[in-house]
Each structure stands twice: as structure tokens, then as C-alpha cells.
Image: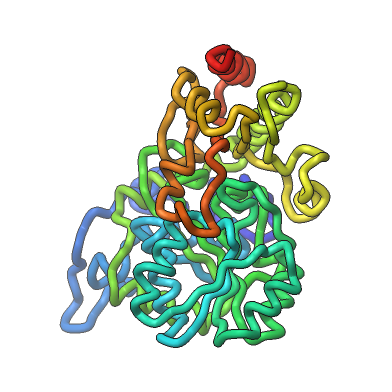
Amino acid sequence: MSVSENQGFNTRAVHAGQAFEPRTGAVVPPVHFSSTYAQDGIGGLRDGYEYGRGTNPTRDALQEQLAALEGGSHAYSFSSGLAAEDSLIRALTRPGDHIVLGNDAYGGTYRLISRVLGDWGIGNTPVDMADLDAVRKAVAAHKTRFVWVETPSNPLMKITDIEALAAVAHDAGALLVVDNTFASPYLQNPLALGADVVVHSTTKYIGGHSDVVGGAIVVNDAELAEKIGFVQFAVGAVSGPMDAFLTTRGLKTLGVRMDRHSDNGQAVAEWLLERPEVEAVLYPGLPSHPGHELAKKQMKKFGGMVSVQFKGGEAAARTVAENTSVFTLAESLGGIESLMNYPSEMTHASVKGTELAVPVNLIRLSCGIEDVEDLIADLERAFTFLK
């Protein structure tokens, strides 16, 4: 079937890029593993296919699906989220350019920008993205090419006003890049709010089953798309056909999964809020969260990510993290199973000792799609080890 931007999210998720195979009528398109394609004479390409690094029908289908769900004109699929970010930065910046990013950015993003691309001549300034005056000052002080934000942020769950930040970036001639991994395209569409570029770790909610690693870039500007597409081809950090297929399969159920993730996240956050052992619950679905009203405005629901800080400090956080059974202690997030993470020593270990360091009394929960009663019972049992 043809897919229209006026159709609902779940319809687009199921059908964008997924036309049935014409010869047999197979409703699931085949996975194309071929690394090269026969030519009808020199330069006689069939439907533009030449070599697997440049194009692959399975990857093209995923890219069409991603663009349809983020409301973009072009999408590009990569072998990981960091590969996508690296390709984006190299496509659109040059030595001497500067990136202003959130002071609670994902540790891997900061490591890429500061320790890898910093040696290439790309500068950076971490800043509180909620403080628009501070952002304006940081942008004006340098040759800023990108304003880079995660909202909700990882793992402090800060909410940033995308529309306002886009205005700040554009006034300075910069581009706004939004990492939409935590929200997913089901809960939030940054391009519609003025962002220029959306990036994802598709490993997380988009893939959704903890069985594939990938990344994506989505844009609405043909000139930006051409530059990103060139680097995708020239550098070659593309998703392979099986990875693209698994990501597509996960993406088809994103909407129904995010509804359940959000419901479970809300219930777990509300339960944690009542616990005497807890110092703070960081979840935008709570009215007490400073970004609650803004999140209501720019998100459909509040997602499955919950961070919690303990009055007992580092020891308490470590104790809970190491004594759950339904929540698995592991890196990553966004899968159907619930995961527990101690960011200070796991996902954000690379920013220890910097202003991006994560509090040592914090754990991050990725609430899966299990029965929420079992999630709460698992946490309740873990909390008994604090006494």
C-alpha cells in the first residue's frame, strides 16, 4: 500500500518502505544479503543498485520507514548510534567549528566529540540547555556549527524546550541537533518543533528487542541530506542487511511498545516517589518534575526511562542495582526487558571527573513491557537489602 504522511503513526510504522514482494506477493519483503549487483552493461544499474556499501534494498526500506516516522524527507541508517553521530559531525563541520552540547549529554557522545573529534579540531562547550541565556552566550563565543541536545537527557531526565532552542541556534546561524533516542519518534518529533537534525541510537527503543546495534540520522533539508549521504557512502559505517531487517521489524511495533513502556515507567516512578529510601525520582511524567509541563507540550507520553537517587548515597545505589532479578543489571536501554544501570561506572564512566559526571547515588531504570506488578515487587525486594 502507499503510505501518506496523513496516516497514523502505527499505520506508517507497519507499511512505510514495506511494499509486498511483487513476484510472490510475500507480505514481508525479502532480506537482501548481496554485496554487489549485476549491471546491464557498464554503468547500466538496475534501479540504482551497484554495491552494498552504497545502497541495499533492505537498508533503503528501513531508511524510508525512519523518515516517515520522524516526519523527515531523508533518513540514513548506520552501524551504531555513535557511527551516525560521527558521520553527521564529519559531514557538516570542519576543523575550527564548535559544538555547544548539553552538560548532561550521553557519555559516549561527549567522548566522541571531545576525545576523538577534538583532535580533529572540533571544539565543544557543555552548557545547561534549560538556561537559554547561557546557551546564547556559549554559541556566540565560538564558531558554533551545532547546538546538540538530548531531551529527555540521559540519565538526568532533563527536558529542553526544542522550539526555543531551535530559535537560539538559528539566530546564530547554527543547526539544532536533537538526540531523540529516549523519546523515540512515537513520543516526540523534533523536526516538527524546529530541529534541523534528529539522531537515534536505533539499538534502543526503535530496535526494541536488545538484539541489534544501529544508529540513524533524519533530516528535512536536501542539502544537508546530500552531505550526510555522501559521508555514509564514502566512510561506509552502514547497517548490514540483517541489522536493517531486525531494526525494521522492531520499528513496526514501536507505538504499542512505547505505550506499555510509558505506562510502566509512570507506575514505577510513582511507587519510587513514596519510598523513604529515595532522595529524588527523575521522571518527566511526575508533576513534581521541573520539566513536566514542557514535556506534556512536546511529548505524547513520558517514556519508560526512570532515574532514582538514594539517600544512602553510592552504597545504596549499588546495593539496589546488584539485587534485582526481573530488572537485569546491564548496559543499554529500550528493550522489551527491564534493565538496571549504574551510570557512574557503566554508561557514563567516560565522563567521570568532568562537569558531565553522573551522581554516584543514581541508578537508571529502563522499564520494559513486563507486568508492572512484577517490576515493583522486584524493586521492593531489592530495597529490603538497604535495611
